Length: 530
Picture 1 (cartoon, rainbow, N blue to C red):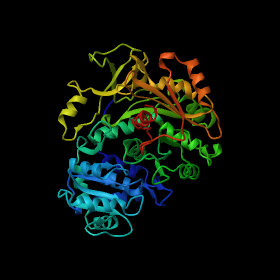
Picture 2: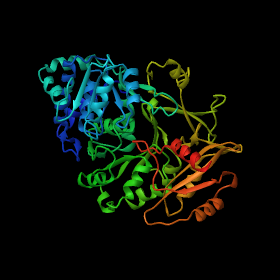
Picture 3: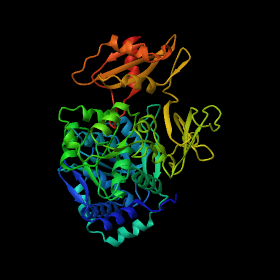
């Protein structure tokens, strides 16, 4: 395919000229409603306000806030002036925040007061004395704080700068310039800053929009945290660059508020992990009739159980929902199913590569390409990250000399190009020398009608290498004994792969982006069973 060589600011301006009266951004919890004409005005004066603060092209600006409208405004404004966005997890700990601000060389930070009063401001105050590089602290709040710039003042001062000055800056930004540094979760060490450019995130967003069948008539429901690429790029930026409407129901994940917003704002597309969707569908306020407008969207972040897909497509009529697979280092999506794929394809596979990507399966030990239907490591080429910021060794380790990114995920590809995830190189459980893929066992347990969600995971064992546990969350009002569960699994799965431990739980530890933290489950199981 032909790569679009434009900046985010350029494409955004084109969208605003084309659809000035379309709803652009609606936050149902806080209240603001922007059409594209008004959103463009707000973004431009914010961009000029940042320029008045002497934020230059290439400067890193951290953004630490829950899902507020100003997040989107700041994201586009920073892109327009060539600054580099550094998203921060709202739930981050102070020491990790300090590391990211320092490692990214952030000149400024934009923050909200926090979900609980002034918690974010207080943390920055404590850290700032040791951060001479951090020149500006911009606070989104109704009150002012010492040595900070109020968001309202920032935007107001931008009105004093001529439009021509902003235009000159926008023309100076190139598609190949960095637009964001997004930090990995750091579960295996210090977080790494993934440097992304305009050309990568724009093309991935527009190609994925076409794959989903999105248009300016769609209304996307956004409750994925904006600090995460799934939220800020795969949903927010994709909606805006397509001229669609972005509906934000809540500051942080709140099923009741999400369900109300879907109905009242006639949302047509929904996005989230399987765990998030299960939480919505199992909520007491869920009403099938109020989902009549929802027809499309993406499930990502974890394998989708067949029972969930059947419920969405057959029972609720979300007929065109797709399954996507992406990684921050690849500028978001790698593969995606097609809206009209059979249910089996949308559950058993992660779809085919987007047109802007090349994907191959290689032997993890030798690096040699593997034939169809052979398990190996998934490797990707096309519109990748520029680098891990200030980590050349890590960059070289992740991207080989021929430009292929090694994902660390195991999978296989069929003759039609559909890829199936079979596990992580580090997540495959090895017990007594037998390799056990968690999803293989999970799919069997999901067939039980009483089961709402299941997580199968391994944890260290002194004699067997690893041991296997299956923890299950039941549907509301359902009953299932551990004995019945164990007998059922024993009948369905080879004895070498049967879990040794079962447990009924009320929920699972999750990241704010909706991914279950299996490493925490392993720690809990090791403490409980050994």
